[in-house]
Length: 182
Figure (spheres, helix red, strand yellow):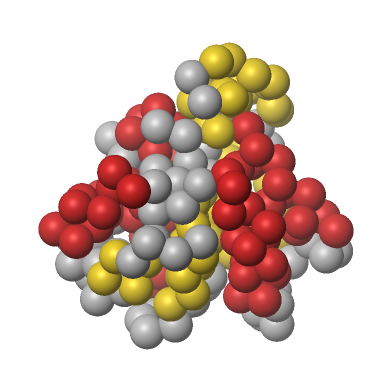
């Protein structure tokens, strides 16, 4: 299973990238870092700069057809940047169009709101996004993890770094048994 991790050049919450990344590896998957440009991205620990990570592919050069699933880590700046990038939004929307599972945490749902794919979906997020999600038609609830199968794909959402153990378990279950990307 090949899993895309879509991130901006700066601002991804590091633990929300590294924890699910390691979970994918631990379960025999292949994580790939996708960003708006090639080179390095810079993760953050809250508002402080953290480690760099090498990008595997530019979002303009890949599509949802190339992957089995998508993870959207959070951090405030990361999805705020991604939701203004048409290629990133189109890439995320492609997983919904193809019925492929998506896992999103923290502020990550901003990208999905821009992609117009959250209407009638049960979700959670960082608490400050609840109004944004409700205004976009999602059914928001304050729980560590929400798995929604009511829609074109399985959508796993989570609130914050403290919820990563539950998020990681849920994404493993959601991603299991997916047919390999063509």
